[in-house]
Amino acid sequence: MDWVVVTRAADMHLLRYLLASAECFFNGGGKLVLFTSRRDRHVLNQMALPAGTRLVFREDFPELGEDDYCNQLYLKLRAHEFVESEHFLVLDSDFLFAAPCEPADFYHDGKPVWFHAPWDDQALRFRAASEAFVGAPIDRFYMRSAQWVYTRSVARQLAERYDLRGILGDRSISEHVVYAWFAHRYFAECYHWVDLDHPDVQPIVGLVNQRPPSYCVLDPDVSLDEFPGVRVLQFWSHWDLAEAKMREFLQAAHRRWPDRPMTMPEATPIFVPIDPLARLDRLYAEIRGLYSDGWVKSEVRFAIVGAISGFRLCLELHVPHGSVTGSFQIGSDAARDFSLESGIGKLEAEVDAGADYCPVSFRVDGAAGAEDGDGRRLAARLIGLWVDPVPPPNVEIPESRELRDKNREIARLTAQLSARTGLVNDQYRRAEFFERVAKERLAAMLAIRQAAEERLAVIQEKNREIARLTAQLSVQLSAKTGSRGEKH
Image 1 (cartoon, rainbow, N blue to C red):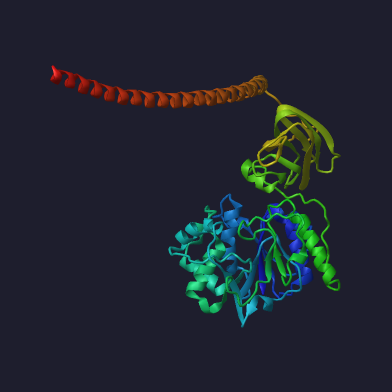
Image 2: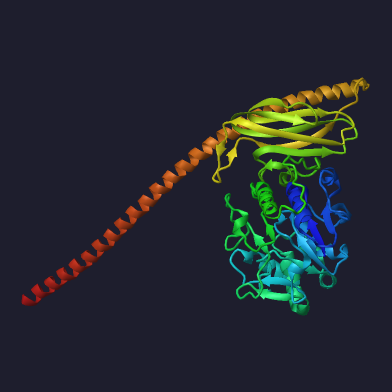
């Protein structure tokens, strides 16, 4: 049975544990089909890929967009084009084999097993878009268990009937829901379908983090002992402890079967290559050590590849409060300390010509950053990343009078821009202060208005009571006046 993994740069640190666990425990008899990017070859060269691994590169799919999440949905549904076995196992980088495992474990009565369950509140986010894609109602949720064995001929039929490019750009579609619904409706005889509410077969894939009802169980004390009978485990790649826990679980699994050969990956940082020309918001998801909005979480690590000539790397950081200190290292140079004051600061370093793979790291040590509502320390945020070419040494570039004048003008404008940037920052801080004061005053005014409205309502109620009493008194007076007239 072939097995398919769609990976990306940000998940390479987890992929190495999946590969090590497969070497130790998975006797699939087939080949690994690994979807990756060409620029990740430096990281892949540091891993022991299984013999016969077939690499499929994202760059060969020009229809892919910038959202790697949507891209991986699409590529999984195209995987049938690259496998050789009729049935193939679909995994992610955050899976781990935790016990001896072979293709027969995924079958029952000669058919691959697929589990389904009723839709729950968290899973419903996938329903509407998946139904819109297939043009039919989908009554069951086919992702409750992460035990996904695809059938090549069924996947081919799905690709022929639907334009899979419709998945690109829509994060609310589930590739597994779409595939399993299609297989269940048109090729039900190809699978052994199991209702998880009344199972006749138990899953062999366990969920460490993405368990119902929240699908976000982040227990730092979770252990392998909590998953008896499970042969494969799925973690959550966005969990800060995912790598440490995968290593811990793999060590625990190997202690149970010490005779099985295993090469434990070195617990060394991985510097994943990035494209410095990519949009910054996309790089946030690829660079290790950043939150998804660019705030520095821990040590920041990445790599620049393909530097034929020397270049200068520039990192721009926004420090909202006080000052920060830290260290910055690029290439084989020694780490150097830095200090940035409140505002916008820059880290720069040159790389020698011919550096085909250049690791970069920096960390923020001392800082006066505040915490947000999620408990994050907001000390510094990456707001700019680019590279500039560096002229070769001892090469003089002739400068004409016109070019010299333009350079002076650029320098003057740069100085003006720097001064205005400082002014804008000051004005921004003042605006924040006045906005806070205005909000406080508005809240006070609203409170006064509410009190006035309450008092007005009381006065209006009293006026109505006075009018009612006045009317009653008028009636009484009229009655008395009439009775006196009759007596006279």
